[in-house]
Image (cartoon, rainbow, N blue to C red; front, side, top):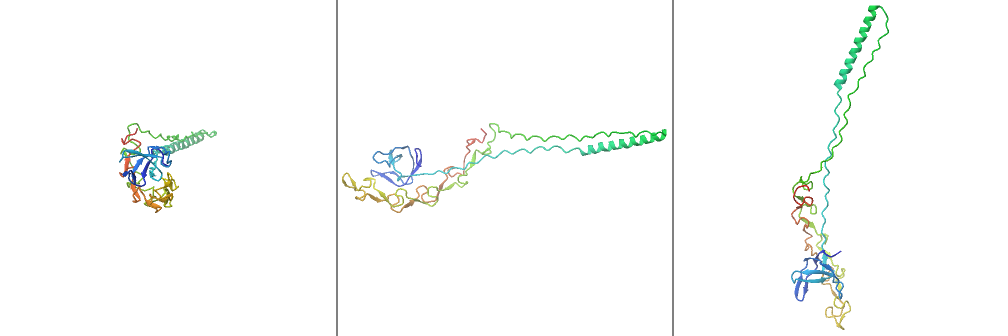
Length: 268
């Protein structure tokens, strides 16, 4: 929908008092929406750079220019540091403790048996407590550290310090398919609703003007559509029938200034 500030293209040559005010395909900005009291269809106020005058144009005279929107690229997620695994248990030390304890048990048992035979007395067998062995304490896993926040003045994460990013709107080709004609080079005529005929603007379809036959439509109240010349379609004024045009995002340069760091390459 055309609104104040919209960029539009002139759909056909517009001549005012014998002078060309606008060329077909010329791009102009809509400065205001102000319907003409006598002819409300003429409501788009635009400036003619040739005549340095402002005119009110209608929907038949202008076409809204669609602007492709670059896809938003999500910033890469910071790498998650790997969790620190606990060190392996010291198995060699555990086995050494068990061997020493076993040897002590055997020595005590031999000594007790020899003493009992020498005194020819029977003594209750000595109860030897085997010292409990404890496994080495496990070291708890270290908690993952927070990803460092880039300090101001560091490298910009979006452009990696280059100051420019690749244009995704045109896939780094510098060219985009024309959205006005859907890359066909031809657009359907909205001025006549694809009928080839339009109502006379001078007599508003009555065939008379000030009590006399309208000289514009010869009293018919309508005439052949001047936009499509009665052909119902016409060459797309946006791409001139070429099906594509220079990418408006990168201006055909394949890259554009990084919007995150404003081209400085540094984190803000």
